[in-house]
Length: 479
Image: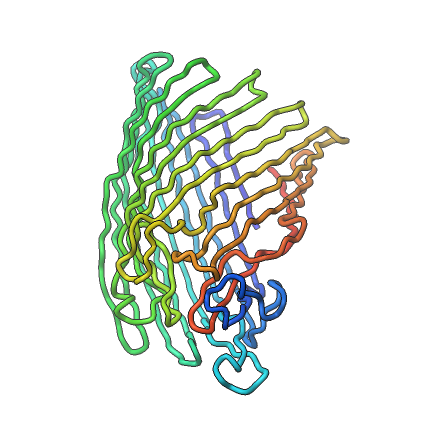
């Protein structure tokens, strides 16, 4: 449920307040067991139940989530610019339980029985409370020669999690409380040297302070850490015509380090993973053609990621985040065509080459040269939207089709985590009349089945299924 209230008066001050509430109770996620004797041989991996829609675990999964929050966006104009304030608040309670083994046959442990065992149970109870505040000023100076944006950002979060787990029937408990205070200052200047040529320079300085209070069984852990970095950005744009623009940018991204909440020992919890730093280069062309009826954007990029944070599992079922180096490069194409006033067709494509260039400091797996987790070599998405006047309102419908080439969900590119090519179709229909908006959307219209990830250790070899066809109906009223 969501409510929005906006003020758009004639005064130079504008505002919008948004509040939301979500309450979800579901069966949660289920693991689907595969052949425990496959030993990583792809041709031997198959579901024990015969379907990616059927789990064999005797332990029922569940998810109970409640979240509420609000945002307040205020804007005030001044001569040559606008000051913006964005305030956010959110509170989340999330409880879930799952057997990540999916059910392992007793015979796999040498037990003469037809029963299936829950060998990897986790029950989690967590809360998260966060507030954020951003202040920024944006505008132009010197008769439009200089465009600028600058501001300050603050984020505060308190998160707790208590986990009861049982791996191969051996119980353990752990608790996690992390308090984070993040501060940032940012700015960017664009010098419009001519009507065609502009230079860009900017940056962001971020510092995160984190406090960890945790326990694993009977061992308490306390520590404080700080992560800070300046991330620059530079670029150049050139307008060949008012409708065709070329650009080049270099920027750096920063993601603070943190703690392993799924660790298997107190020492692992007490060892933070490192910050992630990305150096990104991009060159491209943006176009608006035929009186803005056709849009085509093309870009080439390369991201060199130092200490990319990646989750992996050890042979005892423990999950850790470790740091690796990676290089990701590729090309992206976006296009849309407004065929008529009612009909728009669009599509985008991406071609990627992403590999790890070094191994991590914790895992013994040699990841050098292996594919980056979750990155397809190709992805294509095409769709259409149609809207036409009907009665006193507007009737609309549309859909899209997505193709994604195979990916890997584990850093070792093992067979259990190899996800094959996948295709999906989505659709929607809607009607808008005055302040009322009615919308029905369908994801995975053709109810494609399969899995999105998998991992394995010992005889625990689960995969996790795609979401089935889902329908979401919404009604909105605009004041």
